[in-house]
Length: 168
Ligand SMILES: [Zn+2]
Image 1 (cartoon, rainbow, N blue to C red):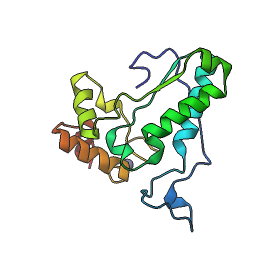
Image 2 (tube, protein in one colour):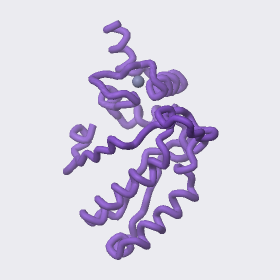
Image 3 (tube, rainbow, N blue to C red):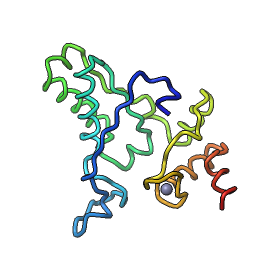
């Protein structure tokens, strides 16, 4: 996807010690799905801010949608406002760059995001929604189920679902 978008650099960050709520015994994460990874967004955005400080970037763009904000507190407007302030407070360079965290999809549901993506020609066959690692989507995990539901709500055809049906 990054290559298709023509990015100048695409850096991978590996976080093998992060665990999903369902993999953490005897801990209750009230109101959160079993796929919740404790406070992952501060971690992800800290990596992005580190990269921004390194490269001089002044914007970090997050792809969170309205549906995410209804479930996860670390996707709220208040959280991002304070995080942006904290990151600027922690770095002269980020302050000078006036680092901004933008979330242009935050007022749209996942189905609305799909409609927008379709309108601008996003290659859905290159996107990844599955919570599992592998060569193809499992089409049964929570991420895949959410994808299937969103494509259905948006009344769009998912090339991955079509491909999966041909294989099975
Ligand atoms: Zn899956």
